[in-house]
Image 1 (cartoon, rainbow, N blue to C red):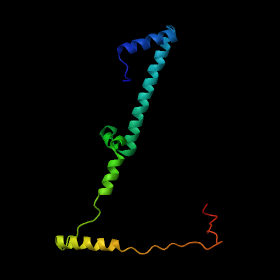
Image 2 (image 1 turned 120 degrees about the horizontal axis):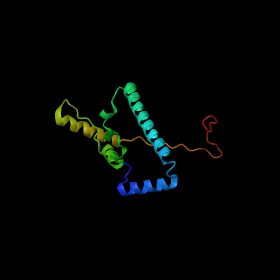
Image 3 (image 1 turned 30 degrees about the vertical axis):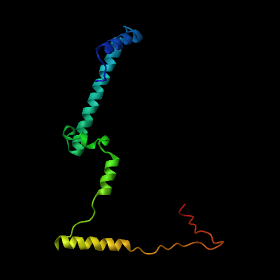
Image 4 (image 1 turned 135 degrees about the vertical axis):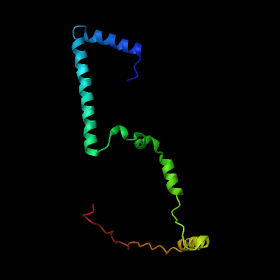
Length: 132
């Protein structure tokens, strides 16, 4: 459960007996047992509350699907960049698709000239006091 094997458990038990003492050890073991029971009761109560509110059973959920370690950001970005956004035109067949692709390519080559406005000498940049 906690990665503790037999010899480690015996060592922890001996240390517990020495630190706590044999007189108080039954009291602390009873407190530990009560704590474990309370945690189990709270977990089952939470499970029932989720089942009532959401309407699904926790055991039926595929938790591996929600594991963030399975997502590789490099792969996601690569797939997004390589994704083909053009949809083929159904009417006209391959010739229409080729014509649409060449028209789109010629359209993207014609860009309007970029206009850069500069301030005059001594002119201050516009300032909006409500925006800051």
